[in-house]
Length: 45
Length: 261
Image (cartoon, rainbow over all chains, first blue to last red; front, side, top):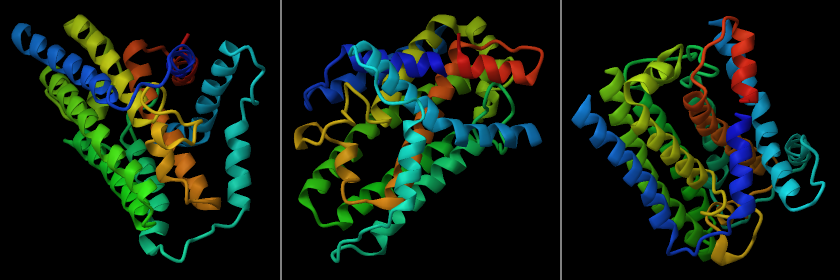
């Protein structure tokens, strides 16, 4: 837990807030990663 | 069962502390001493002691928002395995149920914001409705992956016991992507930088904060507590995945889970 919240704190310290039009792209990165992980798993397991 | 309930109580009690650690880390990197670690507890006590102020343009929906928000996230924590221990409640498909509980909380927060008839809050509500849609799609994709790996759709099957370690052995590299995706989802769902800045009050930088501007007193305390618990929910999920080890004693497990070093 401490690792996760410290990482959040570090992220907030070193990054600035994204412009509003960039936020969907940032959030879509999560979807792309999850989608890729699922496809890889479906293919090989 | 008793241990599960005690861990659930631990989640409720410790959630503001973990949110306080973020303040401390930010202060450290900013070269400041920062607020005390227990600042969130002081804030909650201060807010609960105050009275709520309601605009004459609001209805019961405005009062219902904070209560439903806190109630749903507290209920969602019943289904979360904390420190690798079995959750208090579990049934087949509870992972989807929990996501809809969080969606219900969001719906009522948005409804309460719209109820004020303020265009400023309406703007925040529109943003709050937009970004989590993408997050939900990501979480459902992660659930598909976990279902594929475990053959189960319960959070208990994903995160309790030695299961996370088994997941790493079965599909290590994809799980690394999942951890990064969950971290981005955590930042988005909890309105953290770089998606939102909870410290600012400028209309161009606000998503979640703008919706709760009209709440005060105990209502605001409920919203704040709900936000701490939501942060705990996602952090616990990630913490369990990055530290999938299980120690011999439940207390040692809790220590490993909390400290995470």
